[in-house]
Amino acid sequence: MVKCRNRITRHLLLIIAAGFFHTGFAQQLKIAVFEVNATPPLGSPVAYASARSVTDSLSAKGIVFITNDLPIVLCAVDWIGISNEGHDVWRQHLAASAGTTIDRVAVHALHQHDGPRCDYTIERIMENHGLGGQSIDNAFVTDVIIRAGGALRKAMNHPQPVTHIGSGQAKVDSVASNRRLLNTEGNIVTRFSRTKDTAMMNAPEGLIDPWLKCISFWNGKKPVTALTFYTTHPQSYYGEGDVTCEFVGIARNHLEKELGIPVIHFNGASGNIAAGKYNDGSRERRVVLADRVQSGMEKAWRQTKKNKISGNDINWKHIPVALPLGNNIQKDDLVARLLNDSLNIHMKLRAAEKLAWYQRSISGHLVDIAALSIGNIHLLSLPGESFVEYQLAAQQMRPGEIVCTAAYGDYGPGYIGTRKSYFEKGGYETSDIVSGTAPEVEEVLLKAIEKLLREK
Image (cartoon, rainbow, N blue to C red; front, side):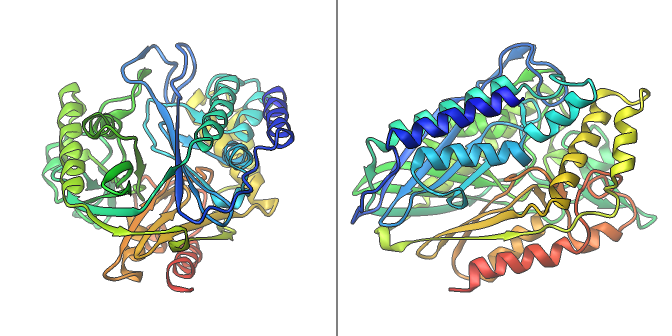
């Protein structure tokens, strides 16, 4: 692990010494788009197994906004999660590569469950307990980070001018559904990403955000790139090591091929949203779900309305916050789980995840909440597996405007529920050590979102 971090550090120093920091003062908005392959090698650990095959390639895609101020970087990665020191290193390396500061970089995972994890903190804990290399491949993730920085620098050598921004949205039918259902006894039961339970499938969708949003950037009449946003756990069938970008990635790739421009997809606040009502876990359902999301993307693209923009229209704000640590996250308990030989590797990994979050929290680590505003369009960046209520609340803060949410930033806290959810009986997301935050997180997160979206 130290070797991997040292390798990153050496690359950062070389970037600085080579003078890659952007010092120009563009009068016009320009963007640079970059992409690298992020597919793990066979045998490398993914979410629930070792990679045994590659069904679809994974990618890390990003966009750099170049204005009179320091560049802004948004990046989306086809991995299940990027957290703690892993998230720090991603942002540090992209920031150095772009010639900007870490607070102007947002990195998000799409949360595919047959994708890798990235977290140097967790892997160090696992190594200390004789479990190294079973859940995270440091050498692989380090290589992807370095290559992403190189692709970013190369893209910034040939930035593209942007004169217009486009926006469109469309409803996606029969994909997303709320995971938390109330049973006849008044308890919460969880409708996971796949189910064959007829009652679960027949239950209402519940609270979701059905709108897929598409934000595009144009040079005159020529489209340069598009960002899409949709909110759901992106799982169809998974868990045996067959690497895939899942139905959201498949839809994105098809749209990209159709339009002939890069398309970068972001997953919204999907902590309590999944395809369970419409997904029985069969292989055929992945194709169906991909077609439905692709249809939504195409409709949103066709609904695009364009407006002129310049570098003066770009506004980036970030707020570092301390997410309150859950009372259930206790060091002695987590260490005991790691030492308990009756627990399997996945249960020990969960303990390591929350021990990493515990260490970060008590050290005073702050998590960045951020928003990029371009006229009346706002791109909100949230951490963890935030509940959809935060996304819907953000939209209410800018009525009549467009708010797109990308969650799964720093994956360290895990699920981030609403205050009410922590006091409900039952429900997976706020049970045991699944969530690393306390009920007070709602007040902290909503206050930060409001500052970002309402205050000038």
